[in-house]
Image (cartoon, rainbow, N blue to C red):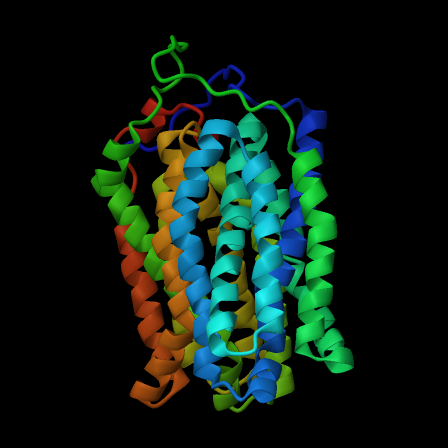
Length: 423
């Protein structure tokens, strides 16, 4: 199987921006990603316990609403990807930010669980149009040969969302309660993301029709239906789903697992935070890693790294220092995997149908992310310990690494000479 090609002289990708225009788009998307992830996603982690205590609703019911919103996001994301491929990200990302208004208002003011759940359904729609997948689609199209650098910058900056917004949500909660906290955060979301999406993403969106003549060094525009039915795509989707389930279940259950290993809760929280440092390090080194590996090799290596680090956490002796180091290594693997997943479609089938294909590819992974909190906790309860649960999650990631071996089309590099190795 050949999955890379030698560097080739590249013509500009249709729609690619000049360096100044690309910098502007990267700045805009990085800003809105921090705010959108912080308000729509990470604030819930900080406010969940207050919601449960204040309303009397069970933690399962409250968490279920949040998981449901991510399932909605995965389904709506398929349409969002197709729309961005056709006309660009400006309208859909702006509209999604506006949908967050009634969504978070319903969450914050909910008098009962039914309204609370309805609010999270709308927030799920907002997530589909504002978080990573649409931003990745925009940068893949506008970035051209510089897309990996642009994607890396975006994920590095957006990685600060939890660092900024989880503490901010807690401070607001302590001062005024979770309902007012969400209203204040919503005001910030609207004031920042709506204008930036509308005025910052207005660059021309040029696409080439399927039947238009193309230079000989360009691959034909992929047949989306054929790609989605192909073995490599199905294997890639299954591998991504298993990996996402493992990654999110481990992140969400890391603190109780480390406490079970004898670490204090405060130190376990520090270990979780240091995992974020590992993520940043992994993303900083991604370009060199991509240049030195083939499409297949980097997928296998990174997912196998997730599996190995997860198993090591479960099997390591009760040494706080060692567990923290392993947690940082797992964070490093997670950080690289974010970019491996972001570039998976482009590496194999080119950038032109990226939004559509990535939306379909991401949908089951978002479902896995939604189920991950329950999956990790249920495994720990069924098996009697978080360590045993982590071993099962590691095995799932190990299966995903094996699936990655078949998740690249034959002669992918020859079909698409702008593979990552040529960047």
